[in-house]
Length: 346
Image (cartoon, rainbow, N blue to C red; front, side, top):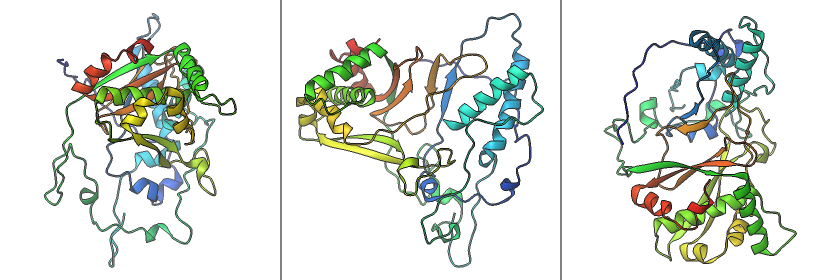
């Protein structure tokens, strides 16, 4: 498929609307942040229908976006900073923002006033976390510059990095599952486990269905091990727990493991039961802008790999889900011909 190039028309630099005193102090990265430095930046884009009102003015709309982003950065001031490395003589070291921006943008539109700073419904916690008995200056990395410890395979490869992996050619496609389809998968899972005391969630039932479908499409050897990794929010799981508004990375990976043969031979209910043993993470599903509800979500190229699945709330609302699957070309063709998977798509 040939893609048309995007021609920039103009550009601007947005800074926090007000100076934040805390921003004058170093904002140390926690251990959770440090382990993700080598990952690509997370790219997500929201698509909106173009307003057809005669009163809509693109220049006014862009100005309100700029004003609301400037106010949002007051709350998310670390995003307006720069990464720095502190060198010691002995050693060397180193989907809330969307909701906040949307909230501020809507209120600017309603009040038609971008002068006063707008408070937000979910304040952030910028206090950093560090293991008991340590301080941030005790976190040492054996590097002196960011280029030494931040390496991403799509960038020019530093001479000191030996990195043989090259990502294969991948295809992406979004599949829509309606509320009714997901309810049927959930009901089927409960029927197949035959245990009324166990409550299988819609998320686990759908994840089990996707996992089985992906493994069928990949055509793996039956004695091969397969894993289902779910990224989980660790904020409430730590002791003591982080505040809900903690700003920073606090993620964990929940893994379920079996063999290809076992996965394909067992029914949907048993697969969902495997996932049931892992706690489900909760996602903030509220997102709206001043021009209505997004009609679609799209992601950029970073952090893609064969078999990656991303769940988005469905456009129609309710319990519907849009699923983005990243696959090799061969596996994607097999998935599109899967007689159990495709009929479930709406």
